Length: 400
Image (tube, rainbow, N blue to C red; front, side, top):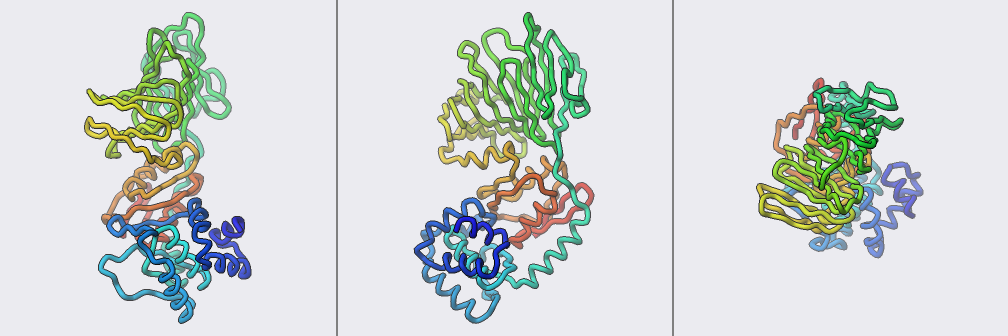
């Protein structure tokens, strides 16, 4: 049944298979299974003001209402407006799919009060085609700029694999897959280098002279020593980076951003410091780190996230690691994310400007592969009928 449900979600079922899945969904005893299925397929928003959790919903009552509605018409529309209506979702399939989809939404704690006909969805699709005549492809590579200690800048995308340069008896190599690797030599002279990764880039992997591996996200930069001497290892970042730090108890590793310092005890963690975000976030996957800002300091356990805002540090113990690491793993993942945050990610990844014409106060859930064109990404959000987009050159216009 798992494979059959996947086909149902991807709209590739035969009529017989579709009916089989629907009958399974209509059985109240299968609600727990349906909830588990939906964890990998949710792509739906809900209103920040009108959150409804499944514990507050009488599933059996809604089930009866759905069955009564579909007995009257193949497709239906609720015309009675509520005081605070919930978001709208288009359904483009048979009444079986309508019934199943509504019950799935109920089981995931989301109730949508309007369902439109196939023709309405087709009309929107046609309008999308007109508004997306200028498409933008996903980036095919990274375009890092390496700045050496003497100020020389090297566009690494244009350099073939092999030794890029040698500085202070340090060899800087580029691998076949585009990673930048520092190779420390005997009697190395340490200098500082900076790698900047512009918007419109896929993540870049950097390996420092001590073996520490770092993945840099688009619109980010990192400054680091070409060799490590003395009693500590220290790097500074802007934007976002994921670290797998080589263990060296005698030489602790530090990551800094402005007044925030992360002390590392040999570990895997993610640091996000984008200016457009309301706070800096440090998320620990393995090992141990401490995060300090001024006189405030916290120590994290795996699965926890430090939230640094205006000098104060809070700890989120229920962080979604998959969401945090989605950028490194080649996907967009939104787990109750507001549209402005989503569009900031779109700006960084597709290298576009985003202009909001309306305030859209909803949170979205989605898992989307990063290899798709921007029009495909935007169309997925438009299926909610909460937001609409137009591409004008290198600008994405956002409207209700």
